[in-house]
Amino acid sequence: MMFLLVLFLGCSSHDEVPVIVEPSVEQVSLEAEKKAEVIGVQEGVQHPPIPADSPAWRHDPGGFVPNVNFYGERTWDDVRMRVAGHIAIIERDRARVEAMSGRFEQAAAVYVALAKTLSQMIPAAGGPATEIPTVARDAARRDAALMSGLHTGHIALDGQGFSRLRAEYLSLAVVYRKNPNGVALRSQASDLMQRIRMFNESGYQRFDHLLFEDFDGRHALRVQLWEQHLDVADPIGLDEPWGHFTESEVRRQAGALYAAVAMLSGQEPDMGLDWVGSWPDLRSVDPVYWPSEIVRAKTMKDQVPAFSVEGIGRLPTGDSLIDVAGEPGPGSIGKLERLGLDDPKHLQWLEDTVFVLNKMMKDNPGGLVSTIKSRGDYLNQMQHGSRYYNIKQLRNAGVRQLARAGHARLARQILALNFPLHHQDWECPNRAGTLIAIDARLAVAARQPDAEAQMVEARRLSDEFLAEISKVAQ
Image: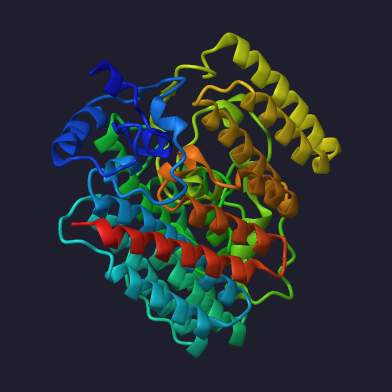
């Protein structure tokens, strides 16, 4: 029994739940799977210990493994739910690239296709595996209607929550194009500003992506985060935060929409947020894009690029779209027994590394690529299996902070250090697809010509992973 308890697997151990599996990756027996579920779920445990080593980590399967416990979930529907989230992120990015170029009809078509795909991924069992793809599908349908409305000039005001406030703004923006001095527009703008302010103060459910009691509580939080994210997500601008989706991003999106409405009617744009950055010059910009432009120009203080000890030293999630590129999701579950934040010697190394990286970010951003690689190489010399997570988080931090600072091309170089995939990488559902999805968004930010091709490749890899599930799922 004690031997089984230390067979925690990589991504699944720390993005989802400690998993029990023999060192072999062959399909386990039904009896063994039941035992794995009972032990591996760690009922009631908030942060189970992650051992320094495990026999399971010595094997590199090289690809898909036909064992659901390998991916840290109870059922294949739960694994599909994770991939449904990846596809939602990938296709929403594709739609917004179209929208940013004024191709609203094409953007609507991408959202419609996404909704159709997600509809086919909704199981009847209930729970997060049903709720998350359902929420994502409904948001895709909503945003398809918005894009169609922008294409035709007639926006239907349906729904509720912040997405309804955004639709009202877009409706006003269409009117403003024709008559920027209308009295009715000013009156409607004042009312809308007041309701946005109320939303920012008390109109959404507060959350903390690190606050969960155990595995099941973490999945419940995942559902809440998807609901909140898709309510406030910009359907036009590709402006997700680099890092976790947090309450700060809710406030930033609300503040940007408030400012855009205020600018339509010549009022003071700042809602009193604790944010930094200069106001963009919007005089020659279509008002439809004003909220997106403001979000890109104004940053919450906790989103300012800066390396931190926790940022480079905490346990990463398995799904890097979550803690690198703003996919809604909870923080990691688990605690490293070696090279954790409570290790005094390692903490000193982290503090030194943070000092070096922040100085380099200021003086020589280009040098961060080689520095992060060399510091990762130092960790890799230690040989114990859980060093994988320390190296992964160091790279994640490099991508996050360089992207926040506007150095997307450099961030792509650090992201590329994750390839070729190996060992614990394979325990993350659709690991290759998520990394390429991040790379595609970085390519968009860097205005590089391979952005669209990378989005297509990320979707292909996601579909390929789903096809593997279909071969083995009951």
